[in-house]
Image 1: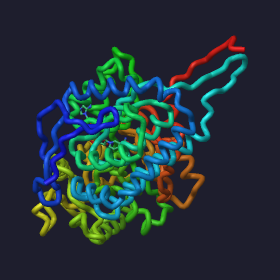
Image 2: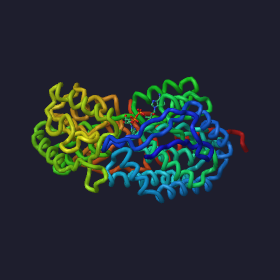
Image 3: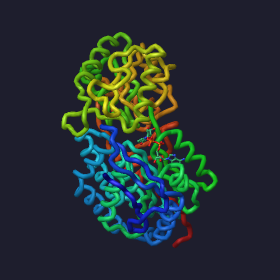
Image 4: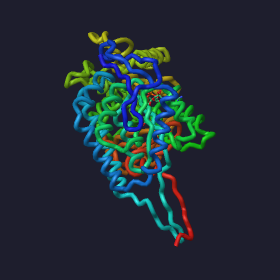
Length: 473
Ligand code: NAD
């Protein structure tokens, strides 16, 4: 059993003041594999005080010192890649291949922040003014459970590059991953107080970060509901906020696309990270007269995907992270059926032989209309909705008919057309013809998908205050 009974403050592992214990459950088997003692508001305040005390000296650190820290942090993570990946499999149920990729991504985020830092001009001259970029101060980092390592390092890398100290509250559902990552951070030899990490609940530790006047900025990834709560909670203290929130991303396949590539890619990308990805293309838009072909290709793709134990090398889809998440997906599948969508494959319940964990059937619905719940709300599970359009004009208007604006996908043989559509889509990231993400480029959402941008130079800029000085010479 893994019992985690420590938090990380001022460069040391210490016992939390909080006493509440949270059980850690393996989503593949529903068995408890340990527990974590949750920190409380007092622990959050201790962490904030340590970050505050370290902030002025860290703000004066040299670029080279921070470059070295980022390099050491990245190396330290890669040194324990197998253990970190195993924890991701055990605690989250991520398939093995994806887990290793996640750890590499986490280390890569720190290297990207390092590169951004090496190329960043902290002082610029504009007219007769000197414009200086200064660290914003203590940053409160709050992250979700669905990609714990990479979410934390994207925010941590940006903060360190900017010269900010941090307090981090990862999801309580990632306590084991947090423990290992914290050990890597400790081994990297970062000055005491620069990085502080507290296990705890959002409503206690997270809420203390949002209201504490010594925290200058909140960098949050999670649901739109909690993002809005955080925005409200930070109004009076005028904290800066970067919010990476939910999505209901469109995937538009034009008539001239190669459907034998575009449809399997659409299905697989919607189901990546066990269907628990903020940027998943969950609404697939196809020309009305191609629907039968699309349904066949989608069905064949789902049949070719192995749903199974995340520890097995060929598994593509593992379990949902918790029973709550399992029930949420079941609720949406039921709603799809009740509201009249056509079930192409999948449906309610567990896949055969996988009743022991929080596994759901990868599910595809066709004949989905814009009013249906499954077309509007973020499901956060492997459920794809196929909608049809008659004209490209209609496709764009349906794609934009959502409160969200995180990602968008386009497939077409006509690149000029793709770029025109990209300019009309309300989303922070547009991926054309199966192109992957560029992790050095900014990531973030339009509309209810968030505020601010992360990664690379944009992430660094989000952690800075700008001061204009005239008469300096
Ligand atoms: P969540 O919003 O429930 O929780 C996120 C974090 O906020 C957790 O650490 C939680 O403890 C904390 N929290 C909860 N209430 C809080 C409060 N009142 N004050 C401060 N902190 C609080 O999200 P989740 O269920 O952990 O993650 C899934 C959500 O995250 C999905 O909506 C998904 O789309 C979103 N997400 C977005 C991105 C992105 O980059 N845009 C990436 C990954 C996940």
